[in-house]
Amino acid sequence: MNLVKALGSIGGLTLVSRVLGLVRDSLFARYVGASFASDAFLIAFRLPNLFRALFAEGAFSAAFVPMFSKKVGESGGDTKSALSFAEEALSVLLPILILLTAIMEIAAFPVVWALSGGFNDASPAEFAYAVELSRITFPYLLLISLVSLLGGILNSLNKFWVNAAAPILLNATLIVALLFFHTDDTLLTARNQAIAVTVSGALQLLWLILACRAAGVKLRLRLPRLSPDVKKLLKLIGPAAAGAGAYQINLVISTALAASLLVEGSVSYIYYADRLNQLPLGLIGIGLGTVLLPTIARQLGAGNDGAAMHTQNRGTELALFLTLPATVALVVCGAPIVAALFQHGAFTPEDTRATAQALAAFSVGLPAYILVKVLTPGFYARSDTKTPVRYATLSIAINLVLNLALIVPLKHMGPPLATAIAAWVNVALLYRTLVKRGHFEADPQLRRRVWRLVGAALAMGGVMFFLNDLFTPYTSGAWTIRTGAMMVLVGAGCIVYAAACFATGAFRPSDIKSLVRRKAT
Image 1 (cartoon, one colour):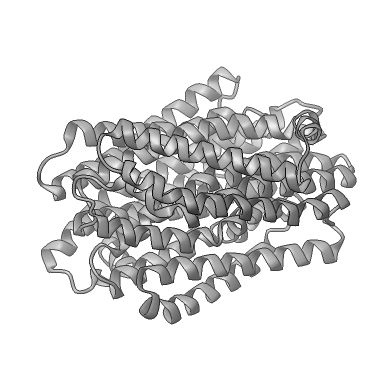
Image 2: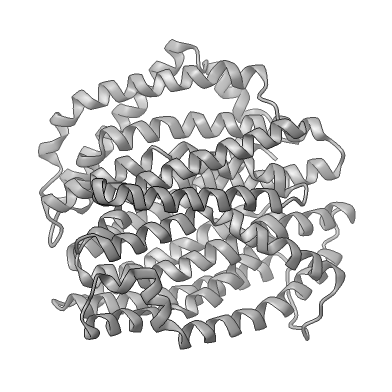
């Protein structure tokens, strides 16, 4: 498998999804703005997203995929025993998901209060509305968890693109709902968005079922049975879920504190900033994590530890090459980017200023969020899910303390900055432990390039800083003008960064060709 080619396949589809996500957010900003209705919907959508990250994508990426991949490898490519294991996992997962969804529906009131702190003393009618939206979105948790199980199977069979395409259906559904079911009543528009979330979950599940059948994967429903493999899976899932979801937990803490302690609209500022921050995170981090985990698991299963370390070195190198310029660009050019995407309709210039500030704070931690995705497969592929969760728990504690310390003086910038610092602590702990165990060592190529990449990114940032004023007048008006301005701004940044990389010796044209061709086997 070619690491860059696989990342390109996932990244391309993720790019489509994230672009649609920006279109969705732009429309949502136009029709709902930064108001109580938007805050209520974002809180309602935050919970199923959290559980998806913790128990669906996080847990199955960390625990299920390595076990399934090893069974495929041990059988010489025959998937019979692996699919039998998947059926056993489904038989236990489905009843748990149904029970969890029922509990969340019943306990929606206290759950929403815990997530929002009561929305800073919202009226009973407003809080009841927020609870209603949460009850509408809760079934998405069950549906997307099943999507993650089926997607994990396809990822283990190297069919990465199918699962990567599923989020496109989410954004497309929400866009359709905004275009055809928006009204002048922002509360009704937000309610329609909540309904669209659950509808999109059903569409994604249907897509994965059809894709699995096309790949010859047909799972039968069985009576629940705790086989030895399922017991091992359940033993790994808990720590894996918490470890993989540290960022999401930190974001929930930030959102809850913002809802309870800051002025109306602060939750929306943090949300819109996080959506932009998630664009490179989704393109690079999620794609790398998806490819690296089964790859390293297969290499270790074959006893090829050297190849596994080489794969992780190249993954780190690729992550930094793509992430550092994105970090600098979001910090330096945050205001024109936010203005071009969101500043129209109900979204005001003041909303743009506040969102850009939150974006800069989030972006400080962007390399850390992605390096966590690169480093944790080194633990998960060795069936160690406990170590990452210990560090994730410490990261969450640090985030909470920093949130409380920073939220008053820095307001909406405090929670994002706390999340970024906590992520860097997590990366430092993961890296130190891998090195100490002899599971990872930065090779000469990686050590040579890191600081040159940093220099190239900073050089790009200096040029982009002086270009900001040229693009600011084009961040308002018709969408074609705004889109064109952003394309030119991004293109200019890419050209400057590429030139700086070659000038500093971070990369040569021959290195790029070699990286694309090199296989991670």
